[in-house]
Length: 345
Image (tube, one colour):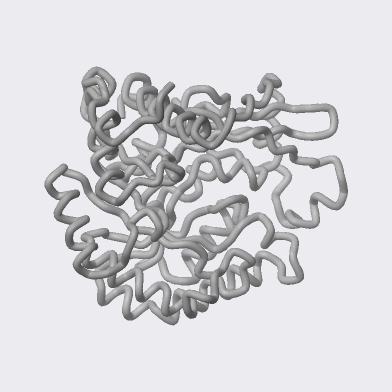
């Protein structure tokens, strides 16, 4: 198979991009992390997403934009307007004590204010950010300490965020926080300017049923990342693998139905990531050092998902970089088709 060139992906078959027959209660979007390896410009990203009927394009990291210069952002906004696409902008960690925080880009406050300005120019109603990763649950500082530090940062920029008319959407990211923890962060920072970027795949890295995450965070949700997961029980572990939309066993159809019911008008944005299985060694005492306050009833829901799953082999590794880039695109497009044809979004 030849690499997909720009003129090729712009000629995607019309049948693949047909909008749902019935109006959806949410707006279909694409998080550009789904196509993170394609090497496209901001304009090429927008063109590709437009071919798949995206109404929202979520630039979850600055690198997908290419630049935060005013004139560049204005051109990106104009191109999105021409395509009938709404923009959402994002950044990475804003917790100064997280291992994921990049201090070389300035203080957390400086980084937020820089992104607020960019979002205002681009017409984004929010700035997506996150605390860190699951590594922040096992370091010297407990996750509660990282949450306190993130709250402190957010409170320090509250007046500027309110003046901008925008909001900060904090993601439950890479296993960093469970739903009740993110809810606490939002409420302590101030839900008048902070909300959630609700991710459906990351809860399973934090030993949480994504339906519980949705139920808990729906009142705070400003936007979303959506992907499917396969989960199953093994002798001494629980296996968790992110998969194409429709190929998991977490009940993605019911998740989509409830999301539309609980979060009407919000973006339902695909973030397609396909991974080998990650093993949760929940029978080892050391594992629970990262989750000392997890309610047994919440873990029981996660365990029930695993008990109902069937083992599956890891996807074969791509034969080289170009094959990996092609597979990433195929994963995204298969997930979009499922979203349109099976979920009606």
